[in-house]
Amino acid sequence: MTAIAASALQLQGIHKAFGSFIALQSVDLTIERGELVCFVGPSGCGKTTLLRIIAGLESQTRGRVIQDGRDVSSAPPAARDYGIVFQSYALFPNLTIRDNVAYGLVNRRRGRAEVESRVAELLKLVGLPGSGAKYPAQMSGGQQQRIALARALATAPSLLLLDEPLSALDAKERERLRGEIRQLQRRVGVTTILVTHDQEEALSMADRVVVMNQGAIEQVGAPLEVYERPTTPFVADFIGKVNVLSATCVGDGRYRVGQVELAVPANGIADGRPVRLYLRPEDRVLADSGPLDGRPNRLQGSVRNVDFLGTYCLATIDVDGFDGQSMLVYFSLNQALELGVREGASIPFALRGERVRVFARE
Ligand SMILES: Nc1ncnc2c1ncn2[C@@H]1O[C@H](COP(=O)(O)OP(=O)(O)OP(=O)(O)O)[C@@H](O)[C@H]1O
Ligand SMILES: [Mg+2]
Image (cartoon, rainbow, N blue to C red; front, side):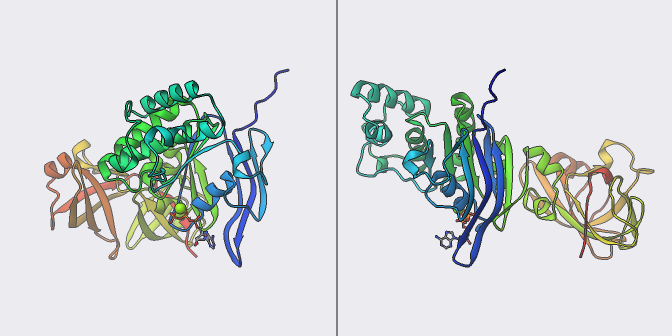
């Protein structure tokens, strides 16, 4: 019989109170080896607190932290096996890049030759070979975060913890580093937790996304799963853009919005109940892909506003018969030109009923 390898990390019933304030409640999560998991959620939902508990920098009120099968719930930071990078460049300003990266290795009394070759290897890994003699102040924000990453990886930890490592960078640099971190993580194979409040960052980088809200986990899943099948209104709202329509269930899979009846297959809400329909701006069919007549959920609406966002546009459309409820509808730039999408134009489209998520309204 072969032994089953322990998961990289298990959080069991983590609870954290600061005085009477509950920062985390009953957080359960298992992370497998080599995964890149993103904790995402609005400011104050407890992401950093959870990361600090994993690191041993904060102690949980209740619950257990198991790393590689070992209970580290009350172990001090130094007795745990991880590297960490914070939002602000936490490099030592008075040390050279070489000494910053070597810090953990020197602490562990590694030999000089080993330290030198490891530092050179790490600087190459993060794309900054030969920068060892510089000081942090001589480097850009993005370069400093690459160095912080090299420092965190120096002792070859089995777990890498990143708390908003990109949020102080400009948009271009942030996007570039996203890709670099993802590639580096794959190459090194280190289990990684990345904290971010940026849902786009989470969707583009993670193997699995952990969506948090008010100290609790709302949903855990692959990016596409969380985007396409949010299990709560909060997740539907927080991840991506979404239209929320007030509606009433008027029969099996039929919902009325204003004067219009929509067909939405497969859901379990009973007759007469007030609900909210959640639908992404891209879940529509347009006339450029064939005639819309005879399609279910065919609508017509007048364009109130068009937001031009580069390769695509988001139009706010006042839908005929919706009694004042408007919708955001996605058009590629070419579709917008071809279909004449501009303020005041009347545009036909159809909703993809199978894409609609239905949640009961209290
Ligand atoms: N040491 C502390 N004492 C009291 N309250 C705290 C402490 N640390 C955090 N909190 C509170 O716990 C909650 C969660 O904080 P945390 O820093 O984990 O949020 P976050 O999800 O990381 O937010 P952000 O995206 O803004 O970084 C917040 O309401 C915060 O005010
Ligand atoms: Mg935080």
